[in-house]
Amino acid sequence: MDKQVIENLVAASRILANEGVLDGLGHVSVRHPDNPQRYLMSRSLAPALVSASDIMEYDLDSNAVDLQGRELFRERFIHGETYKARADVMAVIHSHSPTTIPFSISRTALQPVFNGAGFLSPSVPVFDIRHAAGMTDLLIGNGALGKALSETLGQGAVALLRGHGNVVVGETVQQAVYRAIQTELNARLQLQAAMLTGPLIFLAPEEAAKVNARSKPEAIQIRRTWELWKRKVEAEI
Image (cartoon, rainbow, N blue to C red; front, side):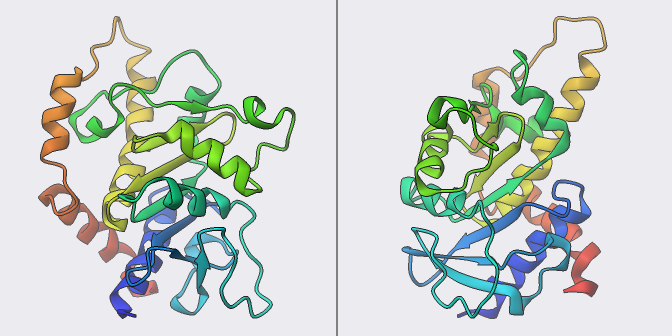
């Protein structure tokens, strides 16, 4: 396997921790570049500590291909079920992105307030685990819950998990990281704007469509920010 794939996956975990999206919890995966029925993700470990030797291969039922006694993330089913549902998705991030959580427990929808977050248009859906499984610990601990979450995500880029966090997807790991960081930033900006005289003016769907048309995985804003974020953590990789 191309070492660059592993390096980028390790960098993604460290970037998201460095940028305040991930803390000691959360995880990032990429679809296997040579086998779309597999994905790559680290063993259960704080994202900022992930290294190449921690990366493991999983099937889409989220079974480790070669466990070797290593501990797995309990919520790995988020990744496997998303890859099953979305052939276009090549990277998945689950985080407890802090400023997004208030939007998951209120009637206020998370909507794009600046052009860096056009992928949130028209608003971000919320997955309430109670509708799928009643009273739980809110964790996506099996395939059925992962499938229910993927249905809420639909064809979108982001879904919130009530009282828990979010899931973000992309066509590349760089795009997914960009979206995860911009989602957290958008949530902060929306909360700040809510303290000002309203009503707020969000991106219109037509504006968001134009933004998204130039926000492909190879777009300059994604490449430029990835290079910056990676430079900050590359000494640790």
